Length: 109
Image (tube, rainbow, N blue to C red; front, top):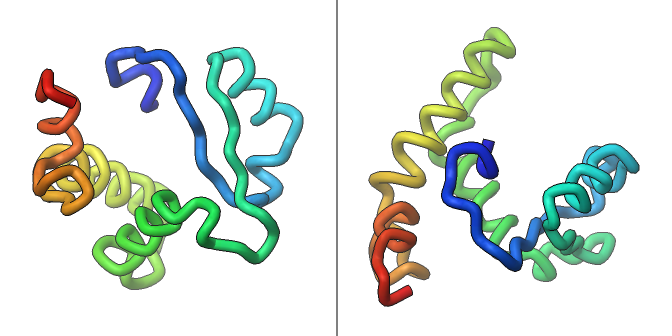
């Protein structure tokens, strides 16, 4: 979704932990096909991917606060949180208190 919905840039980096979904041959092949460099944390070291860990911590504390009654509701709720709130409205201290969309649209960055 990120590749389809955003303006394509060069030098993309995908941060993840060493979960089986990220280490699978199919997933790693899709990164290679999209010219995206993989970055994985060392086993048990969340500080290697602090940005990704911070995002998932925020997602869990602000959005996923209980078990969803269905997969469809979980998917819709998380999509709305990321696409409507997190990327477009939520201010991020690491981005000078801009939303990610505002930061990317600012030509000085």
